[in-house]
Length: 65
Image (cartoon, rainbow, N blue to C red; front, side, top):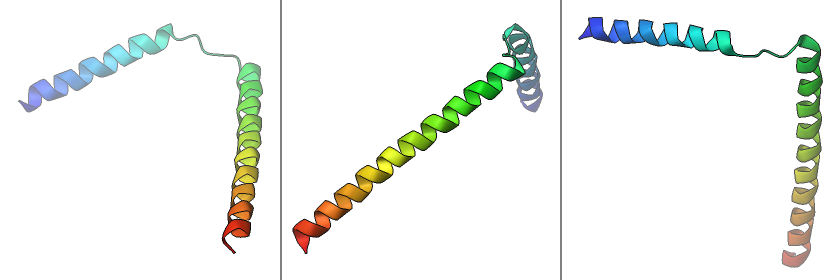
């Protein structure tokens, strides 16, 4: 039972290695550029959601108090 489990893990890791060789990895410059885009978009979305939250809290405070 344990032997079969170990063999399945070894086979899985071999398959992973084969698949990783097929991957087209981006160049460093492209990775840095796209990382910057992701960070910028995250900041923009966080600011937007923060403003919405602030607006809703302010509105609720005016309505309730």
